[in-house]
Image 1: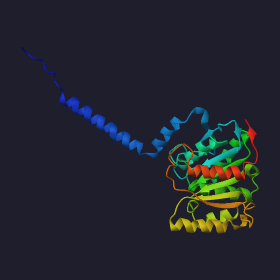
Image 2: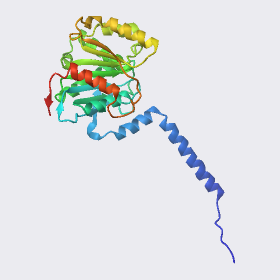
Image 3: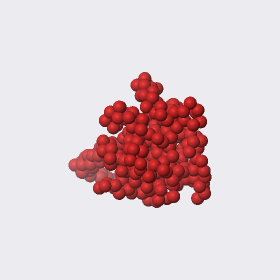
Image 4: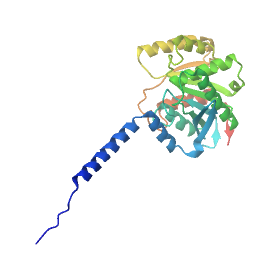
Length: 274
């Protein structure tokens, strides 16, 4: 009796093992590359939600979600933090999806490839986002910015107030979360911009550390021109948000619920039927 054993070409087997390992290493490397990760996220966004903004020589992605209830309180222009994709897990993504489920259209800007130090370009992109919302018949708008995005929102609104930008008529409120004071090159500059604001302003923060508490106090001082002795008439409110325990969820959480509650109380003065 004879047996026919398979003959292995160990060179081929080793080569395949090496190639497989190389592919795994490559995938891990790419997964840790922000540009690659962002391109993958872009692929997951339905085409009807993608709106490209042509600003200067840049083509900027914005993600539009129509409110889901059949009636609308207005629209939210969302500006994420530095290098934060609006569809990645986190506060900005949670807010954009949670608000859309509760009577607010949302438009989130994808700024991961935009130079955060180019204030003019970032302002032009915010302007284009507002124009897009206006083109959809949305004129009751809140700008919501986080971190560096919050700083750019403050800069845009302050400069727009100085220059009598007609688009300000449709911006009813500003909401910032954990303002990055150093984003516009200096804390003093950010505070000066806040002192020039005329928009109803919710200044929210999540951090408990002493530095952030001091910065929150400095922002309140800079916004004193918006504060009234009658809290019902005050245009500035500061809000300590709960811990970000479930900010990775796309369902409404404590943070998005608090912000939505403030919006509904302060700027949802009328309902627009779809």
